[in-house]
Length: 427
Image (cartoon, rainbow, N blue to C red; front, side, top):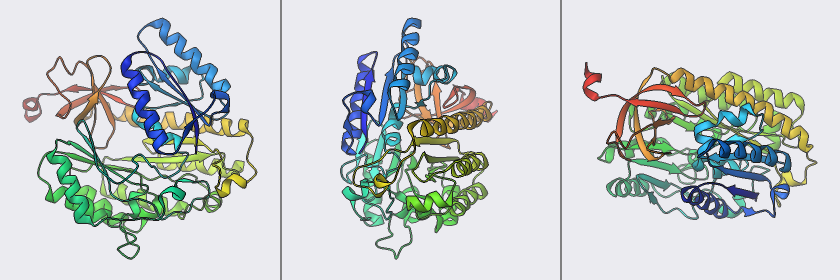
């Protein structure tokens, strides 16, 4: 699995976030490197308390960018408050929220965020793993060696687990798994039970809550795309959000990756959700620099990103995993991977920034789920786009509340919302 190097600056809270990141990475089978020069990914958890601190963070980011042959991830307070500073300084890095770091490090592999299929309640967020294992055989992924084929509990069992989380105080349910799209393939003759599960959670559980569906490969979604999109359109409890990692815009590279889906199948999934939903978020992943990716393949990936314009994009440079078939392939040079990653990351930032710019002036219902910096709280709107509410505690707002906001501005990867009185909305 991946070798990681992580550096933390700032307060005790930042150190606590680093501990959680490391715990998730270790549970996924990743391990620390001896230093940034031998790491597959370097993680910089930043502070922004003083102007001098900001300069130091930028300098350290530039140094790590040079020292690390593969990925650099910048997270923490400066990343969240001033993420554009790293881009403006020409630092080749992924700027991510703390919670998104473990997923990024997976290098396109199936997520293994929890070591089993037991539920977890973290504040007002309930984590519900609906199955273990996957149906894929990706040539670069080592996770399947640990998790095996899909093993799906009955829908009724997962509904009861979801009900227990809501009754215990969960306001946001995060449906997780190695591949949520193939839930039920082992018990339902190769057809996903995800639409039925989501429909029953929304209709059979009392309470005010929202549901986010975790990573689902395009192949699993494709066979139920219209049914699933209709379920999303019917239930306000569901965040209008899907995470469908395409990984490449080239069918040749997808075949070498053994990804099971073709580009057209991914596009048909996107089309189904476009037809059913007016406002939604497409999240996807791209692996750049796969050993058989030639310049034309890379351009096809860039073209696919431009065509579908996903609002959330995870770009990862390929790195070899011991014991996988891709590890035996002759790799591309580090500079080639870095150049392609930089080009796609720039396009990603442009695409994501435009999506958040289009939100300005919009009125949204936001579920507040965690503390932000200073007195702010962080939440997500109907399409699971991140919204920061400044001075939330002074306004009497608390984690777990739903609040109507007007989007006033953005910072490329998240928006700022000003609370609106419900009476004003009625007028």
